[in-house]
Every structure is written in structure tokens, then in C-alpha cells.
Image (cartoon, rainbow, N blue to C red; front, top):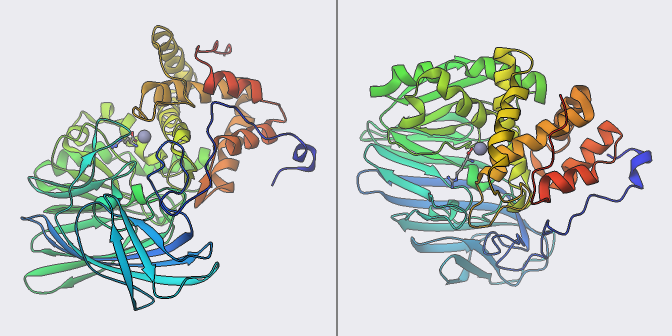
Length: 461
Ligand code: ARG
Ligand code: ZN
């Protein structure tokens, strides 16, 4: 809550930041990707039941979606790409169904009224088809590879494998019952509740205690070797490694518990019930902060451990920034990536001593000063994960730290993580916390650093 002294201060606004649009039946209102998400309802829980033919990459599924109408609804939409829909019901009653390329439109027999809880069941089957994201030249969604299946969806791949309100604004809890032929093993989000031996197949039951954004849902199927450890305060750590590279992966992820302890001391308590990683036995060229179960490729997991620390720290730090506190609109992606990038600099400062983050910042500044980057707060919608977001964004945080001092800076991070935990936040929300904690008006600072074309001068250390 803002203090009385700050309640009268106008919220940070900058015309370069596009606000959410009013939601419509087929859009939650994200100005960058208006096709994502849908208006009129709010999902609480997805129960996904999947039988997976891993060799042929065919899924036979039922999604049971518990939601609440936020408006009077004659019809509503879910996002779904490809696949064959076999049966849809709302509150166990038949409905009429229409499909376009990525919308499933459901018209119940009787209209839903605002505030009404309702349950949608969708039975479907087929082969999910990953596609090249609009946000970056990278494939997203449910993906088969030689060795199994993985899911990495940022920002819009979730609808390749289940019907979903596909936007981080509508977070929900999940339970997933995934049946696979032996000897495949399934890693997913949350805690493994049950492993059921059906003879030729095994059913893995996973459930999350905390809500998650759809792009952070993962299902990873391979002949995994599972390694368990305990983090700070008894936090379960479970890592899913391909047997052939398990020793190398073990060494790469060995610092995880120490990193969780350090990040908890600077960001506040680890936000979820577990952590760990699923390693995909394929060079991915990226890693992904899927909630409680980050995904890494063979390329990341077989690096020399000291070189891998950056990306290991980065995906872990996203659990606070991006996962627990999720963005309101995709334009605010710096709230995820700049924070995770800066967290890796902080880890290096923790390991190598004071001045290390400042050293990295000044070296990065010299490199970026030669480049023509999009401003951190205004990334091109077709190049969301660019250097202006990651490295220039980390510099924004370092410049903020130098401007308001260590005490106010780290209290800002902790206050922001606590205030928006399990929820969503926007750039103005972060600016408001920094202004409240520091007692300074930072509008000009953030205007220049987030939206200015030119890199502002880095304050002296
Ligand atoms: N969020 C990832 C990271 O931590 C990057 C995701 C890249 N984009 C994608 N569509 N896979 O850097
Ligand atoms: Zn990241």
C-alpha cells in the first residue's frame, strides 16, 4: 500500500508504454500480442489429463478448467492451436463449439452471469505442433525430439497442447496426470504427488500449490535419472538429468542450493514449494524458467560449471522475478529479463566480492554504448528478448542501485517481490515501490533509462 505521503503522487506514466486495452472475447488486451488470452473470465485451476504416445508424439487429453465469469457471457473463448477437439461441456452440459485458427469459441446452453463459477471440460487428441514465435525467431510449444518431449512456451506456445487463457494476466494452479509408456519419466511443475504403475505405462501426477502463468507450464518426458537434494529450510530440489550426461549436469547444477540461500537473503524467501531443473538431451540455444522446474538444454548443462553459473543463476532468479511476480503486459518483459540478468551479476558479486557487479556493469556499458539498441522498456514485439532488455535492462537496475543506494535498492527488490507475490505487476508498479522505498521522485530516471533512445550516463560508483 502506498504511504499517505505518496498517495498523492501521480503514478509513473510514459507514452512509450502502451497500457492494457479493454479485454474482448478473443483478447485479454495485451497491446503487443492482442491475439493472446481472452476476456470475460478468470481461470482458477487447470486439471490436465494426458496419455502420451511418446514415440509417435500423439496426446489424448482431457482438460478440466475451473473458472469464474467476470462479465455476463453468452459465449467465451479459449486459445487452442491445432489438435482435434472431441467433446466440450460446460458444467457437464453440452455446448456449441466453433474454431478458428487459434480460438475455440464455446457457447453454453444458458448464458453465464458475472461472478458465476463454471467448469469447462475439453476432450481432445492429436499431435501438437510447435511453431516459430512471433516474439523471437525461436520455436515454442510442445516439442518432440530424439529422446522424448519437452515444453517451453514463452510467450505463446501453451496453446499448442491444451486449451488455455494464454496470457500471464490469468494465472492459475495446475494438476497434471501424465501417462507415458515405460521406461519414460515425466517432470512437470510443482510436486510429484503420485506415481502409478499401470503395467506397460506409468502415470505421473504433478500439482502446483502456487498459481502460474501458462508460458511457465512444462511437461518434460525422457528416460530421466532423478537426483534429489535439499535446499534452505528443507526446500525440495529435484533434478531430472539424461543418464548419459548426469555427471556433467550434476556439476553444473551443484551451486543451486547456495544460490537459493543467497537470493533468498537479497530478494526475500524462495517463493515456491520446490525447485529443480529438467535437462533436455538436445542443444536448445536457450534456457527457460518454467516454474519450479527450469528447462536447460544439453548445451547449457554440459558447459564447464563456472561458465554455466550465469544461466543457472538467471533461471533461478526468474522464480522471484517473472514467475512469482509476473508481468501485466509483454512490453514489460524487462521486469523478467533485466532482473534475472542483474541477479547473475549479483551472484558474481557474492562469489567474487564487492565491486564485481559494478565491474561487469562498466564493462557492459562500454560495449552497449557502441550499439544501437531498442530502449529497455520498449522492445520490438518481433524481437522481445533483445540485448536492450537483458543487458541494458540490467544496467537500469545497477544505475538505480547507484542512484538510491544499496539499502533502498535491495529493500525495493524485496518489497516488490513480497507485494506482488503470486500475482502480476507492471512497470509503474515497480517504479512506485522504488519511489516509496527511496523517498525520491524517480520518474525522470526511469523515463531516460527505460524509454530514452540514448543510453544515459552511468552514475559514479
Ligand atoms: N526467458 C528465457 C530466458 O530466461 C528466454 C526465453 C526465450 N524465448 C523463447 N521463446 N524460448 O532467457
Ligand atoms: Zn531470462
